[in-house]
View 1 (spheres, rainbow, N blue to C red):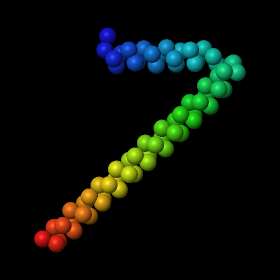
View 2 (view 1 turned 180 degrees about the vertical axis):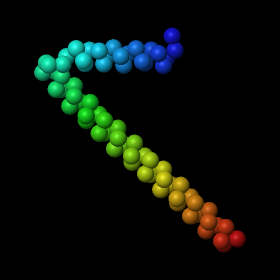
View 3 (view 1 turned 180 degrees about the horizontal axis):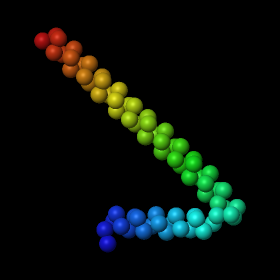
View 4 (view 1 turned 30 degrees about the vertical axis):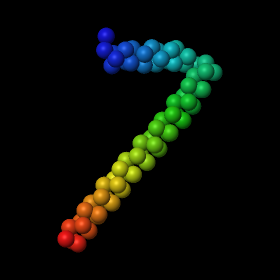
Length: 70
């Protein structure tokens, strides 16, 4: 079994356990934890993408400046 399918099985197993907890107190804790994780991942991903774009723009400007100075 490939690592992709192993990971998929683990995720499906966790999802099943979470869904079985619907209506219990732990369900709210799961939902809150997932919201927090999603918020952190989105924020970090957005920051990474914005920094990558900024680096490309800086590199492009440096390249254009070097060409002008030649």
